[in-house]
Length: 221
Image 1 (cartoon, rainbow, N blue to C red):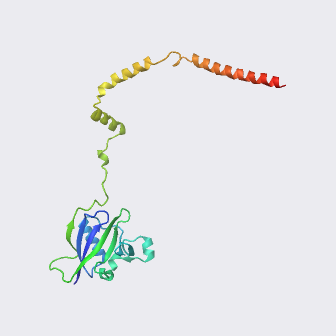
Image 2: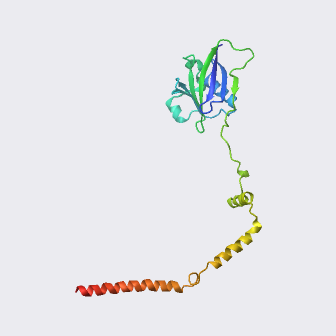
Image 3: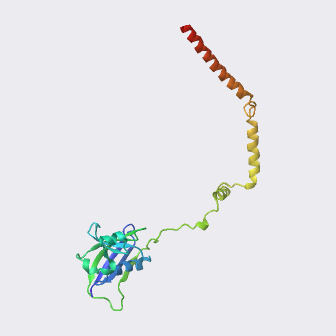
C-alpha cells in the first residue's frame, strides 16, 4: 500500500512542523486525528480541509462535525472521503482550519509518495516533530491569584514600590489639615456675608442699567 508523507505547519507559527505518513486509502479524518495526535489538541471540534493551490487559496471543502449550513450545502465529510480521491499533484496542498470557534490554520503539503509501508508501523504515523504547538485555548488567567480588591492591590503597590508605611498616614493627615486651616481666608469660607454683598453689587448694576434704559426711553419721546 502506498503512503503519503505530508508536511504540516501552522500558518502563524512557521517554526512548528510535523511530518505525517498516511496510507493512500485512509480518510481525511485519519489525517485530521493524526495532526492532533502530534499537537496534543482535542480533535473533537468542527474543522475542515480545503483543496488548495500553490497560493493556499481555499477550494472544495471537506469537513468534520459540520454545522447545519454546511450540511445543507452538501459539504463532503472527512470520514467518507479517501485521501487518494484528491491527490492530483505530486505536491498537493490542503488548507486546513481546526476549531472554527477558536481557529488554528494549517498548511498541509504532500512531500512525497512512498511505495512500501514499514513493517510493524501503525498508520497514520508521526515521523517528525519540530517545535512545541501553541496551547489549544491560549493562556488562562488564574482568578484566584488576582488581588481581592482594587483598593488592596493599590495599597500593596504603595507599600512595595513607594515604601509607604501605613503608620505614616496619621502624620500625613495632620499636615494636610494644617495646610487647609492656614489657607482659609476669612469671609470666603463659611462667612456668607460677602456673598450677599456680591449679590448686592450685581443687583445694583442691573438696577442702574434698568434706570439707564428708562432714562433713554424718556429722551426718545
